[in-house]
Length: 316
Image (cartoon, rainbow, N blue to C red; front, side):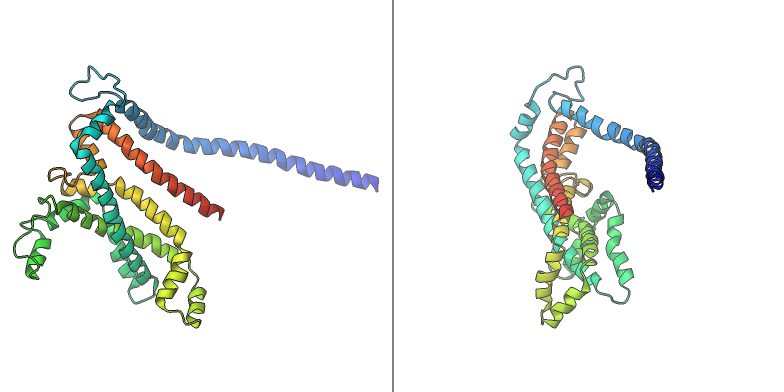
């Protein structure tokens, strides 16, 4: 009995020892294989992301101008002080806020409505989804060029339609008027960004069980009650995360403005990222780097909120 027990114990011990050895060997090979595949991506990120970040960081605290590269002295917070003393700084920051809020709110509302409509099954729903989601496949810069022609004061289709319907009597200089240029670029960005919210919210709506709506319908709940007591609470986390992600994206999205107005007229459509491009074109790399650090600070705040909510969602 004891011999049998010993053999059994020895057999079990042997079975325990061999797989552990194979597991260690397998894990080592797997780790080396993973490192070999990840190394190119790691080097790519290191060279094209973190190295420029370090170089830009030291440029932000130096007098770094393309027109005098023989002398780049350390000036501390000098570039940041120069930016804040510029009369355009307040307008650029305020334009950035208007650009984000003015684009985000209509995008969210229209995208939510489209997602609700697409959740229901109807004829040619797939074709309609393809038409709605198509703009997301086009680059932002190309969309900017398209809307620049649409808002052209002489040949644009916008003025043509407004005059045909009698809304305006003469062509409106949308992109040349300081009071209207920012509205025009926001309209273009709303059209472009609605698709993003539609895709994200539609994906979240697919996860809401139909049984909840059927039970609510049996209780006599109307569409408004289902929306505010079932739909929105169920996908609340997705909505918040999508909004935060979109805020980061819009704040750091100069393509449409740069293509439509280049920040003009008279810097009236200039936001932080387009202003940074302007400094780069002028050869003022120190000022551009300092503005980039200010922009990055704002984005870090929203990124922190996004990651905190994402972590909280995973734990829940």
